[in-house]
Amino acid sequence: MRTDAGKATSMKKNNFVINALLYALLTAGGLVIMIPFVWMLSTSLKIPSQVFAWPIEWIPNPIKFSNYAEALSMRPFGLYYYNTFLITGLAVVGQVFSSSIVGYSLARLRWRGSNVVFALIMSTLMLPEIVRMIPTFVIFSKIGWVNTFIPLILPHFFAGAFNVFLFRQFFRNLPKDLDESATVDGASLFGIYWRIILPQSKPVIGIVAINTFRYSWNDFLHPLIYLNDTKLWTITLGLRAFQQEFNVDWNLLMAASATSMIPIIVLFIIAQKYFIQGIVFTGVKG
Image 1: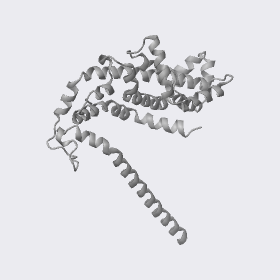
Image 2: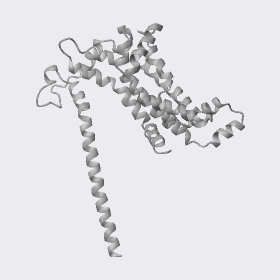
Image 3: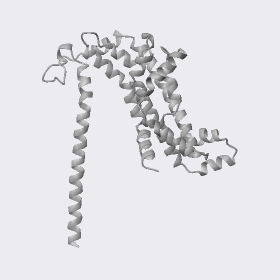
């Protein structure tokens, strides 16, 4: 009995040590990841001569909050925010709707060749985006959609392969009885999807919405290619305008960059529960 008690005590001590080491490593890793973010905030409050001072002055002296007002007034950032919110909002709606309805078809409906279609969709993940970029630009150019928001929004209404995978995995774990009961009550296939399946899919909708919002909000390359008129610029192009030919106003650039992160941070805080649930439900269950 004493031997068993001693072994149990020893195991508890070992688990405590292991857990302590893991927490220490995770904390250290988190602090390292936060360094660029802290440097950005610190730089946004400095005067130009302090930006690259060595050793680094993490706490600016003096603290210049006016950098934010100056940065946002140098360019029409209100318009840039509006353009970015419009593009990003429609991108989220398009991606959630298109990916969920394709995932619903592959997971809940029985039709010949569905597994082959799913394999083909997944194979597109191996195709680099840069390969599709030039043909896509040529198509949009021939149609006359260059210098409009359409090339930045329309592709999101065609389901993304990884998002289809997430929806399919989640839908496969929902009870089949739901479909059968709704069919008996006279619901159509789309009615089952819209009224029964989709309302129960908040976790996976959350993770797809957050990922799409983050991708579209931070996208620089596609707006750079398609938007020539400065009135159509997004936040990322507005930030690029701080880089002049011979110098960069780093303190103002960091101030504007800090404000551009606010929507993503707020969205994650609001939807983090669904984000975590989506990862668990789509990654752990079969």
